Length: 567
Image 1: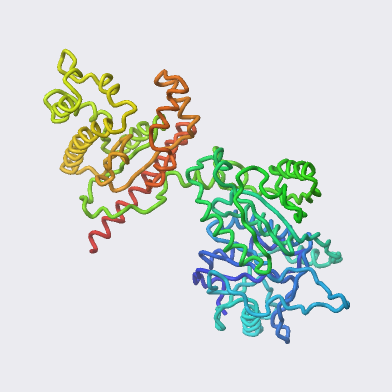
Image 2: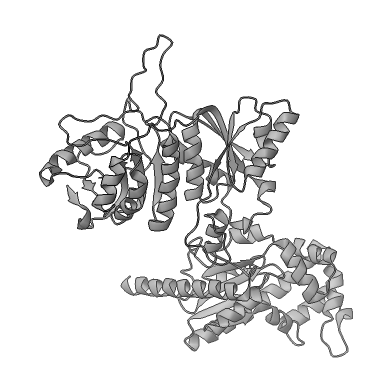
């Protein structure tokens, strides 16, 4: 038996909750808080209200009937988890939740939810329980009971460490009052053979898990999930950071296989707000939240038009996000989680052993109007050397330079102004709409700009500078990433970029759109990014992002220096 105060840390745990349903809501937060001190990654929750451990006979798992109170407890578990142990991947297991059923002859089906122990994707390192130990002398007996009980339910080591959690749950008086209340017969929860939900399910979080768990509670045969894809993602905040459909689908499959293995799960892409929910005649229930209820009603309207019966709308409450910022939604949402990724390292840097360790070079790029240069100036204010590649692009065209000579040779001396400079507007007309001629120009200019960049980086190294930022709109197209340690990309929605370009450059909306569509898309650029930033919100929000990105960058540089010193 390990004491909860021992502070041994485990990667994965199973929490067996034994408190009666009328007391459990009061105990969830303190129990999770205690569990979070011991478990670091994944916490499976197994519900068996009223389970007695160490009472003489060895308890066995039984089916728990689906009741309304169970639905409330599941919501409370995920809601409390978001507040007190946000770092944990909480999963409420429902394998043992099923209405007691009988055969046609009236005999009850054997009450054995686990004919064989269920395998979990993360192997448990510890089993925890809220079971109150009446007598300290019983601890070994309770431990053995808990280990044996857990082994009947899930595949785990026979010598799995066990922990009795002893949080300060309630005062004695409150406990006695709760227990004195006459135990009312729990209200049964209506279940259905075919249940449907829809959503994006990006970065599976507590609100998603609540929706999925309660849907599993309601479904006793088939669970159909429509997952937003393509057109349905267009209006999502920071849609470029939404996980690929295949990743979201796989996470759902893994999660649901553990939550309720007996359920037939079907996952389909959702290309419009309705999907299969308006054509599947077998569906009986759709699970919605307060904000998606109107969508559920619209589904029923379409079903009526299609000659199908209406779906029962089962509404669940949204989970509040206690940690949301001013620019984030009050509810727990994927868009808030995506916004928190801004400024963080999304993918590790590629091998840069061919580069000198210092200065650490950041390649900063982004589409027209994205605020790339404003971020570069903010980084410069924090101590970085800013390399303005647009300015260098003008320098390489100056008279008596290699690029000046080669451009005239390739495109004609009629480009010369009276002062021997190249008429950039006339040059633009010669390459506009002609990919081959444009490539001929960039093949001349880009290598010359790269040479100037390398000279500035070399000078910064001599001056002992720590960080250089290449402010470069064509960083990726020009192949300049081989001069950088990391790539940072600035993104804003296309409609916002159009507004900024028309206001800043006096272009028409059509010309602004044409300019944006001639550049790499946000999604393409993000594929190459180590860090993503966005200037969509107020300048103060951008500054916070930049400060976070800078702080994390300094930590990476320090860590890298330590690794270099020790190797």
